[in-house]
Image 1: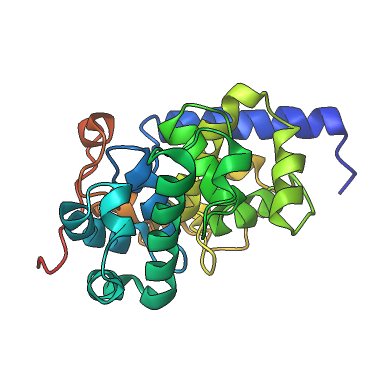
Image 2 (image 1 turned 180 degrees about the vertical axis):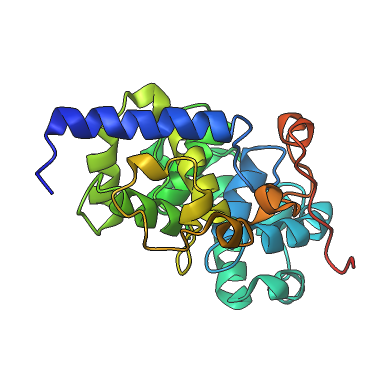
Length: 259
């Protein structure tokens, strides 16, 4: 296979993003949140678990501790009990109480809207900061999660393996204004079709643009059975998804303990 020029790569990458935007016009952050505080806490809790599990857990947390002041003053044992279903609940309790204390002490109880301030909060790295900036403040950012890392390497957008280098390499292929939605499109695709172990290649609308086509199931009927969430007729990750998702036939996820 001949080497792809940089111009051809940019063209192919942007075309993939355009196609994904048509497949997932309702792509959105899959964590339930009503404000920046809820989003930063939910994102910290989402480490090493599913967004669905976080969404099923946060209603009880935010009902009891609706503000940074409330969570900063919380009894850690009570918070641990609520967060137990998310896994690593002791470390996560320490992080969310710590970040709440920092918000109260350093930022007047408000989530800051700058990257350099956000990454100073306990448990908040660049990935979490970009989720918050992009979705609570409307500031462009690329969210390099495990899905994003896997797909951009499958698509040969970059050979990099470190998240900050992936972020820089992929960011250079797109205008800044595309970054936040690009992240949603790629992550949606990674969760629904381009899975880690068995990608549904035969049911993938961007197969003709993908250098890794054939790594997964290519038979269309068998591939269809691998689809997840609304593509496979299952509810998504959010208990309270955006209206556009519901209009497209997506279903809200069930609350904790249901069914």
